[in-house]
Length: 256
Figure: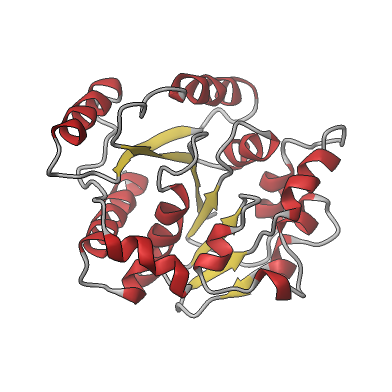
């Protein structure tokens, strides 16, 4: 069985997709067969891996959620050995509305992962930046949640609601769901604020904050426009070194 990790934060612009894509990349580089599920209707993880959303003939996560295709049927090989992608397009937002009254609507992703013919070491879910039907599907399917938190003033605002949702999912649908770690992102070492927020995050999540933080990094911001993860774009950049280190820590935590 794969280790399933949902990368989640209901707030947009916190480095969620960047984290999902780059951690998936370094898992594959570590010899772990990895499936990245783009579960965000914006489809940024799909374009971030160089896939043209206009030319997805094999199907997308919309088809999987509507159960017109299996997960295995929509999975694409990427240019990275060992890294596979289940793509998404903006139509996934419509799919969510279509599922509103459907049976088993909260467990469709879990069922899809469970019945996929291929065996993966890791499945990374790039969740949407909202507490939606899709997000809950991700939480029910996952063994772990990875929580990217931006090192800025409002970082912890709204997280209470997400943690409450996790608690409800754990109680009713997925008793093994656990927080694998909180990942501070967009950290600017030159500002006092970044340091203060980092300390605040550590206070709120004792023992759960990753030792490595993700710095603000131009190369990291540029990589998606070239359709490649940071490790393929500039593996010597600060951003690449940070995600490589975080992935190593993630493997240790998942193993423990």
